[in-house]
Amino acid sequence: MLLNVLYNENERHAKKTGLSAPTLRYYEKKGILPFIERNEHDQLLYNDQNIEWVKFVLALRATGMPLAEIKQYIESYKKGESTISERRNMMLQHKKKVEADMAQTYLHLERINYKLALCDTLEAGLNNKQIKI
Image (tube, rainbow, N blue to C red):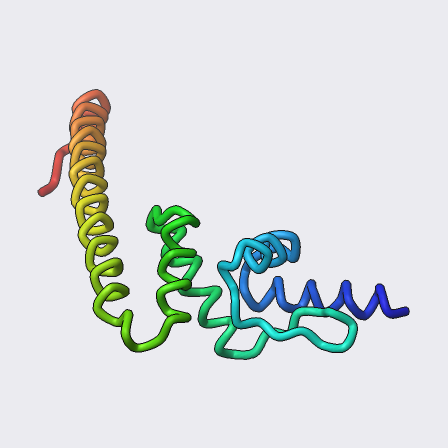
C-alpha cells in the first residue's frame, strides 16, 4: 500500500512539473532542487515554491545552460543576499547567450522562409496560377 501511495505522489509531482519522477529524483540528488522537504516516508514533498524552482531550472535547461552552471547558481543562491551580484552576472551572461542563439535561429528561419517563398513562386508558375502579392 505504501509503495502505491509513493508512486502516486511521484506521478502527481511529475505531472505538476512536466518532468518524469526519475528526472525529478535525479535533479534532487544532484542538488539542482535543494529545497524540497521529505515526509516521514522519505517521500519528496513539492510545494508551489519548489514547482517554480523546477520551472526555472527547465527554462535554463531549455535555453542551453548546463546542469553544472545551474548547480553553481543554486549554490550561490543558498549563500544568501551577499551573492546577488554574482547571480545577476550569471543570469546576464546566460541571457546574452540566449539572445545570440535566438538571433542565429531567426536568421535560419529567414533562410527557410526564403526557400518556401521560392517554392511557392515556382509552384505557382508551374500551375499557371497568378501570383498575388
